[in-house]
Length: 190
Image (tube, rainbow, N blue to C red; front, side, top):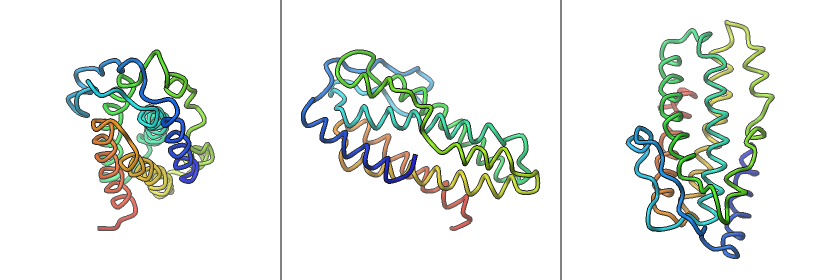
């Protein structure tokens, strides 16, 4: 999803939050393994509409990240890139499990939580990865994944500024930091 679209989603969601208020029911708990990696499920303070939209959008974004790294992981030549891709896959699989567990299953906000994530990301990027020759797959993955992770960092940074639930904002801070660091590694900047 383009950066402008992600930020637009957050702005629209913040307007909806002002009208709808917090959800009626706290989200279900995440799995114990995911909770250990990401932190405990939000308790006490309910998730606002903006928190639900962020989590739902990040679920879709994370699903696409996993699709990207799994598509080429067996073709990568660079050992450091292979290690980074494996670390991204493990981290984001844990985060995905936790975020899914945090999303509400009933009440206001469930339509945002339950929307189809198939449209997140750009299929052109996946097509580029599929079409990349073995000699070019490392370079193409670096480009595709750097752009994708930058968008996640931008989304997370925006959530930190507008989110209501401190646990979700803490997750957003960690996503911003990790994805920004990954972009630096992928682009080869210290």
